[in-house]
Picture 1 (spheres, rainbow, N blue to C red):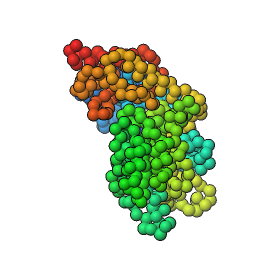
Picture 2: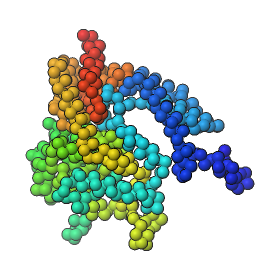
Picture 3: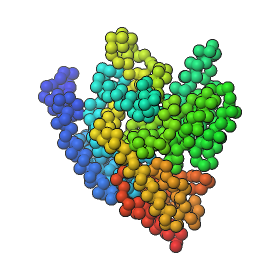
Length: 493
């Protein structure tokens, strides 16, 4: 029903009827409540129909079921809200890779906490945009409070006074911002010395284990390709870094270290790397997108020793933080280094508005429209506290240790190394890369388990990335058993 009459006027009756279409406003909760019940029912039905961590049948089977349930994408006459939700949420749930299932353990893709998902519904319904204060009066203050608190946690008491963080869509955006800010800091230094403020002279130096987003960020910013330091042991070694920095001595350099590699969850030796970077006058960025949440745990934080000395740190709470995507952050020990992100658009942060006391939000991101992703994080931190977050991190890391022990005890597998966070990497003692790849795909096709793959030391390995803090010993045993059975099929043993 349209709100507008044919003559362009408004009909009160139509307005009353269409008010139920909106999620916000005084009538929004009443309109939303029955639809959320439909969504929950569809999620429940989809999980039952899926019956495991992944839908059965592979890409074509899933695509066929989606096409059948979706019908025409844009019908002439709509099916209605409840019917559309039931059909599409149901088929997406049925065809989902469910990170809450203990046998779905391939990627850095966590099962979100229910409290975080509930908060995200509120964020969607209220729909504030964090590009100007008059669009997000309360949400902008929540973001400021959470960002400062998390930055202080990352850098510790010694550097907490001026620490701050920016909300990002994830590690890729955070790493890009880190390279941009480093470039601008070197530009300012060069200008301050009377130089030309050259840009392309900035060298990014990273290990071969660094995330691909570092290379993409350098390309996007017009920098030279990163100088890649070999990392045969899977981590960036300080001695090898020193050789690399010696080769670019005199040029401004940004060292990128990794605390939690995508393949093995390895943590670079940050204290040694930091010492080398300081000796050569280089800035240090730590990509801790995976490992950063270890800072919640006093018991595990030592694995990130040296993180507090970084010039910038990436971390994601949609990995080892149990948040719905997206919940990334870039933390810095001095909010002053964020100044280059400042930008003026008169309709959003006019000078006279800022002088009158309206907060300027444009410097908090390169994006303009931004949803309040921080709300779910704020609710989670308030609900669980640091000790609650620490317990979840500790349980998850402990489960990885248990799985590694189980794999080692079987005798049929080679363990790549002891897990430093929550990733376990292993392969068969007897069997080639084709067997490893075939076992993984066989389990995917049947919807039995979702295992990752990692190319390390010239060979292909299975990767189990545990991010479910509620995983049980029986679940870990099931992973090993499924791999063994698929191996036997693959070898005909």
